[in-house]
Length: 252
Image 1: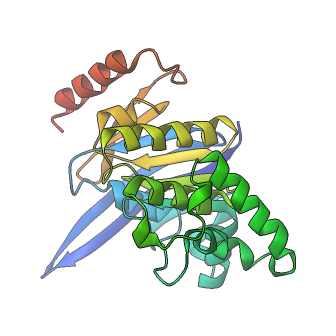
Image 2: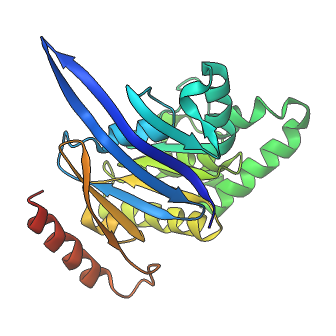
């Protein structure tokens, strides 16, 4: 499979007084088309910073990040913004939707920038996605009038509007109850099966168990990996036990 992200010797530091702290300390990784990946590790290990680095959401001190063959550090902010809008999707723990727009308008907003002449088609696509996510009846509601799980589904609709090559998720189920979390993972799994790569940051072994490759981070480095076959829905307990055993082995 084609590599869509290649990161080599990524370093990201923050200053604390007179000291520099390496949040990412020479991290290298590759992500292929259609992969389903999760990143695990203790708080402060660099998980979210790595996701922000490889998505161009944050700059790096040194090293390289190639996305679809392009060096992100060589691009201006406008070029980075275009790539994030058209080739990437983002799903966060707290969906970043606009309070002055209803659910439907929030979903179509990013896509409208590139399809102003095709507003009807864009709206039709958004409604089709909402139906698929089982939130079609919520299109006119404000974001304060729906549940957390419904809001997260709306965020996923928005993330896939432009057919991204990859979706990045930072604790996308962290604020949800177990039933809503399972539904969100079902949706992300289906999106992945259709060919979109997915990279999740998570503390939850049950979330990681749904993915096919797990990278474990500690002190700004990737210290180990696990690989599974595509989740069939029948071996959750076994996969969770393997993940938790690996975490105990690594002391994280």
